[in-house]
Amino acid sequence: MPLVQSLYRRLPAVHRLLESPELAEAVTRWGRDTVTGACRSAIDGLRHDVDQGAVPADELDAACRRLPERVLGLLEEQGRDAYPKVVNATGVLIHTNLGRSPLPIGVPASLGGYLALEYDLEAGRRGQRLAPLRHRIARVCGAEDAVMVNNNAAALVLALAAHTRGREVIVSRSQLIEIGGSFRLPDVMEASGCRLKEVGCTNRTHLEDYERAIGPETAAILMAHQSNFRIVGFTTAPAVGDVADLAHRHRLPLLVDQGSGALHDLRRWGLAEETTVAALLAAGADIVCFSGDKLLGGPQAGILVGATDWIEPLRRHPLYRALRPDKTALVLMDRVLAAHQHGRLEAIPLYALLGTTEEELARRARRLQRRLKDRGVPCRTRPTRAALGGGTTPAETLPSRALVLGGGQRLADRLRAAAPPVVARIEDDEVVLDLRSVLPEEDSDLLEAVVTAYRVPEKGSQDGGR
Ligand SMILES: *Cc1c(COP(=O)(O)O)cnc(C)c1O
Image (tube, rainbow, N blue to C red; front, side, top):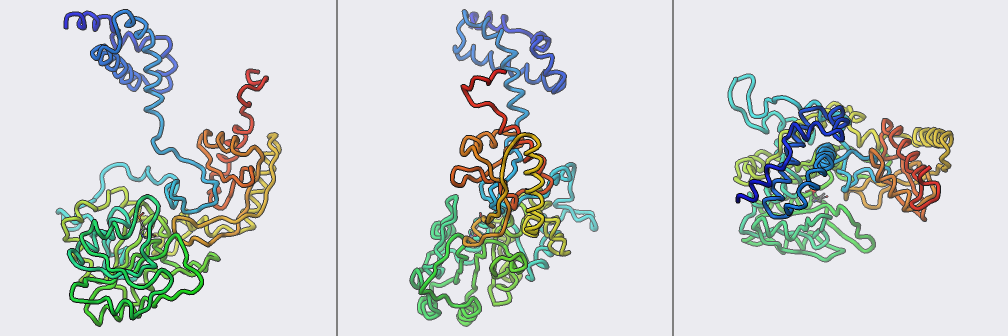
């Protein structure tokens, strides 16, 4: 150890490193405390390398000279957002890779400080985390009671574990879905401790198929929304109301994995009808579950609604503690549900995007095109079709307008490197910036990103250094 001790003595003191001329600008930009912390980490890092024998004695001085560089690297890394904001110009509104439905811009600022999370302000004592939100969820969905968990997969696991563990659950073969990101209904069922009993065929399932499958081991019937695919042609599926009646005649619950969380008639936005959560409950479904970040337009969550008799056991189940939502999700969900409840849908970004008229999109497209032309970037505008996405309505598209630029994959790559990054679509080797998924307040970010990406000189070009 004496050798290592003597090496340690050659490491600079924190205040010495802080005074390096290379770090002067960083101190102005990040503040003295932040840079001091980074200096300490950089020296600790080097000490660790010496310890591990990664830096031999004859290389130590060179390594010490490179310390300011190491500090700048650390500061850069600390300052980078793990989840940077992006402009979604793909035209897919509920984009799973980009966080599904967009949350209102600026919302996290209101999450600072303490919250009455599990505190009953009226009584002045400990309260229940879900109590303030539960009635609002129920009211918005037309249900008696509600539970919220981390996502819809968790919602399904909780419902199955609480009501069907060790017994059989009947599912139509046309509804054994796989959703991207490893959600497979048969696997979720197995993990929840129930046995899958498949009925019917891929294209046709009749009410009698369900009826014949019911036996002493049956715990429930489960219907799942065919979120991300369609079976067309020679098909049959019984109505939810008929399956509910059948289940109830046998004293069984009907669980419905509705998936998207449709609360309103989507025909209002020119989309095909999708059965709403309230309609499923009215048809007799006992528990309906869905995601919070699809058509609800809220944070990631899984919501279960139904009669208290079926919902209360979920809140009491030991798994609920493991699956319960975080406070930030509860706060955001509350705001989003309030907007649904009071019909202020334009306050929910997803509905603001859905509600934008074609004329408005065309006007914004022309304006952006003009401003780009003024700055030397040629582009066209053209009518296009956007998608709802998020495994909601796979065949559905919405009329939209796009800016179209040449430059193909190379320009798209540079747009992703802009600040904030812009994610675009590529069609026929052209970059398509679909305005249906761009919030109007992001237009100027989009403009700057395109101008910057367009002007970056090609690698290896002669005028690169001019
Ligand atoms: C989206 C979806 C899921 C998965 O929901 P997560 O919130 O991603 O866990 C499950 N079932 C259906 C029918 C869906 O549409």
